[in-house]
Structure formats: structure tokens, C-alpha cells
Image (cartoon, rainbow, N blue to C red; front, side, top):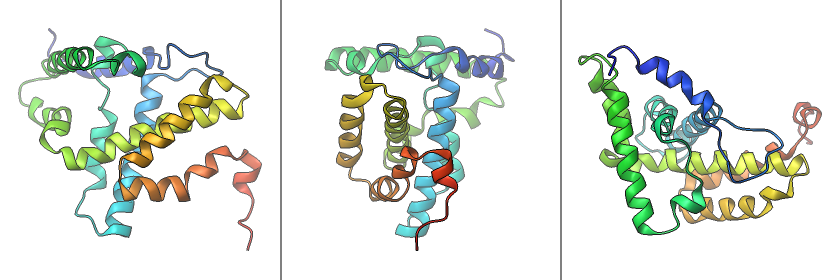
Length: 199
């Protein structure tokens, strides 16, 4: 395995298409999803810090989110209904994800690996903080559903409802704040977004 191939592999996120079981008006690749999740995770951490007094580093949370699905470069994207169909499949897939992440880390020079291992192991090592990434991941999926529905694609109607319910069930006040304050804007057109707020 090449010790200088890590970043070349990261660029291959753009080749991994998400939502494979659904008809899409606009396809979404893993690079786009990772960016959207990182922006949202950073926002949740900022909200946590400024609105709820949390001791959290938004930059670290954003960095973790950028790499949260990196193993899918090797495994591909497994659709949620399959991935979470039963505990055995879920456990097996987690094991495959860990092996894929280890493979990616080995593509870095030895002295750089520890910095990236922190990001790849963040879920196991910091589950409370990783909740921000999980919430951002769900919010990113919800926004994708909203965008598809705006384009007239009813294929995403049930997914939007289920994903919104999943976000609410997380019990993360920062996510609830984001969904109340910011999520509605994703249903607006460009012209509506640029209008002045009504006084």
C-alpha cells in the first residue's frame, strides 16, 4: 500500500454516489455530502458553544465530519434500509468500515498517521461529541430530501419525514435549534433567500 496515496484516495469520494436505491433529480456524491455535513457539524458546534455554553471546538468537529464517511471510498455507500436492516448486517458492516479506515490510514507516512487516526477514531473515543457529526449527517440527509421534494420528486417524501423524526429523537438541543431556525430556509428559492426578512 502506497504511503503517499491517502489524499489521492480522498479525491475519489466524488466517485461514490449516494442514495443508490432512490430516483434522484440531482445526484449527490460523497464529496458533496461530506462538505455539507462538515458545514452543518461546524454550525451545530458553534450553536452549542454560543447558545448552550458547551466546551467544544467547532473546528475539530468540522474536521471529523469531513472524514466521517471516508471508508466508503473503499466500501461504497450502503443504503440505510440495508445497513440497518438487522444487527448482524450492521455489525458486519461496521467491521468492514473499520478495516477500510485502517487501510486508508496506512496510506499515510507513519508520522502523519496519528493526526488522522484521531479523526477516524473520534466516534469510538468521543461518543458525546460525535453526536454533533451524527446529527449533521442526518440534517444533511434531510436537506437532500427537501431539495428533491422542491424539484417535484415524491420519491423522497417518506425519507424526509423519517429523517426529520430521527433528528428530533436524537435529543440534541443544537440540532433542534438548527431545524427550527435554519432548516426552513432550504425550502426557499434563491430570490426568496435574498429578500429582506419581514419586519
